[in-house]
Length: 189
Image (cartoon, rainbow, N blue to C red):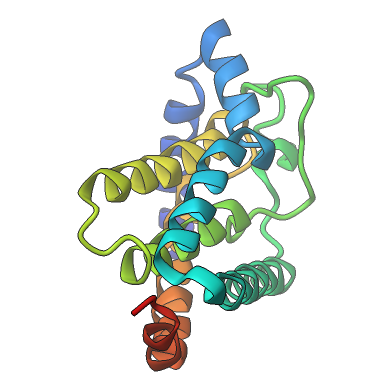
């Protein structure tokens, strides 16, 4: 069963990684880097200040803890599962598309990018972005672009992304449940 899943995962990876061209090489190379998303993050801080006022720092501290938690959980899973990235898989190395010789760390399961972006997005939708459909869409697009970039660059299999999304979702809902009452008190009256 596990071998069948790995085989399907590899086939999907090869298909998605094979959809490359020079424009996407540049686009996905930069969208996988956090700095690319700074304008979005600045806007989210602005929305936080608008909604939480002097309590913004408390809200941002919870977000920092959320990201720290999701990142450490994904790294823990990687180090326990020890599934090689496609870029480190000797059977695939010669047939996959790698951009700018970027190979990433040794292990791929689960994707920290997918876990972290999903955790952040779900948490923000539950708190800051309630009733803001445009921002919902932008944040979902952020998750999709950041996650697909990892497959495109040859760094993750689709299943790494899918399980990363599930992990990030669970972490976000858990953190939200723990801090829900506290966050409501942050709002400006």
